[in-house]
Image 1: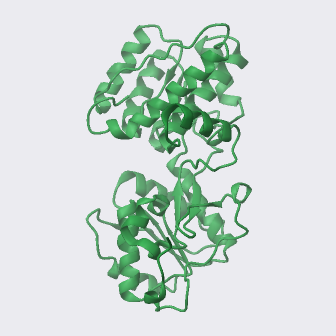
Image 2: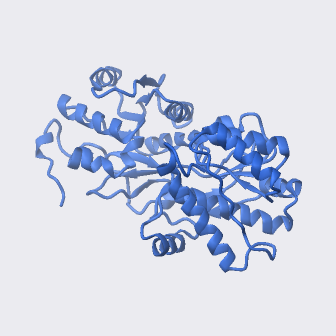
Image 3: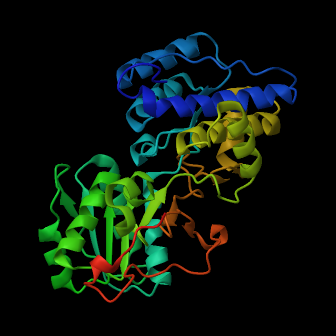
Amino acid sequence: MSLTGAHADLAADYGRGLEHWAQETNAAGGILGRPVELRILDDGSSARRAGEAYRQLIEAQADALIGPYGSAATLLAAAEAEAAQRVLVNGAGWSREIHRRNPRFVFQTAVPYGAYGNVMKLAQAAGITRAFLLHRDDPASREMAAAAQAAAPEAGVSAGEAQAYPASTIDFTPYVQSARASGAQAWIAFGSVADAAQMIKTFKRLKYAPAFFFASGSADRRLLRLVGQDAERSLGAVRYHPGAPTSGNDRFVRSFEARWGTAPTPAAAEGYAAGTVLAEALRRAGTTDPASLAATLSTMRTETVLGEYRVDPASGAQLATEPLVTQVLRAQFPIAWPPALRKESSVLPYPLLSYPEWAEREYFE
């Protein structure tokens, strides 16, 4: 785990989630009559060092492994686990590249980038038939957009090729012009919260408002600080939501807040879910034998705070969990998709008023 270096802040809550799981598990008597010993090594935010760290853990006869935080580090950790034929639960590696070669001992609990195509199901439910699709020019956003593009035909949505924009983009005027020319009802974008804010600022300046506005970064509360009330009704995506009625989530949120003084983040939930799945597999297998444990993980179904755990037996890639789509409503971020987790009766269209009357929007207290 990145205890130091550039990724330390991102990984910190993942570690807290793992520690929280280990503490709870030991308070309940451990697993197979033994306490959990959680051994964490620092990879210094280096994917190469992550691979070396997992080699050390394997040589130290760790019974099972939980992956590091981040796809690049997980890719190298998974290679070490596969070579040694030791089970690794991929708790925070989201890229399909980790499971592309069908590893036999690596099992994903993280919400994969490929699951972000679920936004097309929401677009279909909202009556969208034509969408404009774009993404930040980085591997994660590109993989999310590819999933959305692949999901579009089945949802009855015409999306065309996804357009890439540079990470430095602050003016989305050319893309708005393309969206207008295409007659798109929906704007669907994958990138950062800063990107989402710049899109909204461009919309306002150009007096443009699609019926359906999704930008993955719009699930980040920082959007309210960046654009205020203009964020209203924006749709975004998040890997985990503290308010989700997933199995055991209420108890997890309460106990996590009591211990750490804050609500769990997606990273914390990912660490906790990885431990939850590993513990259940150990109980069902009744042994730490890697072959038996891998066989159990490949066919097992169970519930976590992220949703259902169910993988492709051939690759260990996650099939069931998906990101949660949220919508900004009066400065709150309720779940809009999937429907089973939604508390609001319906998703509201993006325009608040008869555009272009942006000036009539008021800020909520």
